Amino acid sequence: MKGLIKALCSVTDESAMEKLIHELLTEREREAITLRWELMRQLKVGKTQRAIAENLHVSLCKVTRGNKILKDKNSISSDLLEKELSNE
Image: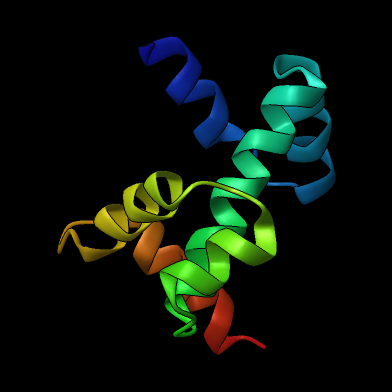
């Protein structure tokens, strides 16, 4: 795992990161991680869990898991989403 983390941290170019993600993850894995990010993004902007589950056609359990991640005071995902949303 440490080797993978070091490799990911060394990529600073957005297009190189996109290529790496396509090399490492299957289409289904990319869809799953993109969906998780989108549901957490929607939570961050204040949409309700039920609305997100309905709009994205996912279970409330998936949305609740994303919400739990965002509520963790040490959540890196929460920090990254905060930066993303403030740059819009």
